[in-house]
Structure formats: structure tokens, C-alpha cells
Image 1: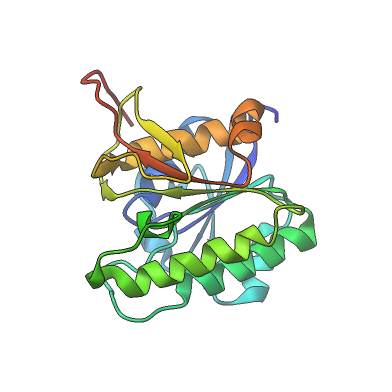
Image 2: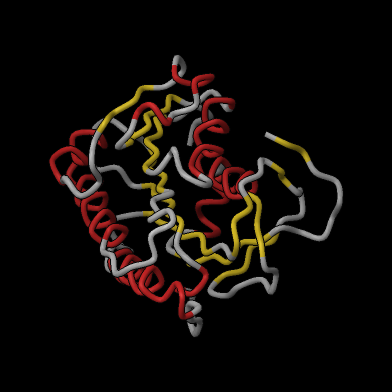
Length: 219
């Protein structure tokens, strides 16, 4: 991959999405934010990105937005709603369909820690966990067509802190109970820019959490 990429971000105004947006802009990428509510995009970066208003459940809107992109990043979530949902899985279907039509290969999506192999979500979050498991099954069917990776964080702290020793585990959680949003953004930027990271983690489910070091940077 070249250093600068065309990147579309779904869920870029949410808990972790806003840090992904900010980091992608800071890295110099050509960034598109696909959002339902443009007014929620941080004012400081509005002039540096393209904003597409749309609904991830609208396949035509999603398909159109993905055209000419190099990488798709997704931080889709249900916010404070804990009821039954198909938002993430139906959104994933539309994203995958749009990527395949326009031959976009690289995808990173955030899912819950409970959708890792042999893991389960707490009862309170069971509906979201079920939908995230459906996302994983959708992506597993695309191993030949997409270079995808899913991140499975525990509690996400809405902080731009980046611990240089944050932890990644394939197909397993790391044993830590939280991760900073800045660390999720940091991994996504590595996936965008570093071909070795893609090769190492392509088509993998990854647990991610904060590391033990106290030396951190902030975005």
C-alpha cells in the first residue's frame, strides 16, 4: 500500500469513530465520513474531509459511497440501545456488497469481544453480541474476495490515549478489560498504511486492549 489512501469511515461520529476520523485526517489520508447526522462530525475536521449523509441500511447509498475508495473502516454501533438489532450485520452485508462491486479489498470492522471464538457477551449486551456474531459469519464467507479484519475490544474508553504496548491477540481476548479509542484508531492506521500488518492479520478476528506501559501519546 502507498502511504496516502482514500478511506471511507462508517460510524465516524460514535464512541470510537470520532478518534478514527481525527487520526485518519492527521495521517494525511483522503477521508470520507459516511454518517446519518453530519452535524455530529467534529467541527475542527469538517473542512478536511468529505461528508456523505446516508443510512448504512440503504444499500444504494452505501454502494455509491464506496466507489473509488481504497479502504473501508467501520465503527458502527447501536449507541445506548440494547434491544434486538440487525444494524451491524445488515450494514456489513451492504458494505461487503459495495466493496465487491467496486473491487475494494481492504476492510476493518469493530465487533464486540463476545463474538470472538468461544466467547459470549454479558446478558445485558446479548442482542448486540448476537448481531456482531452475524457480522463475523458474513465476513468469513469473503476470505477469497476481501482482506478483512475484525477488532474485538472489551470496554472502549472514549480517550485518544495510545499506549505503544497495546495488545493484539488472534482469535482470543487479551485478558484486559478496556482499550482506549485512540489505540483502536492506531491499529486501523497501521492496517491502512503497512502491507506487513495486512499480511499478518488478514481475515483474522483480533482481541485488542490497552497495554501495561504507562508511557502514552494522545490524539
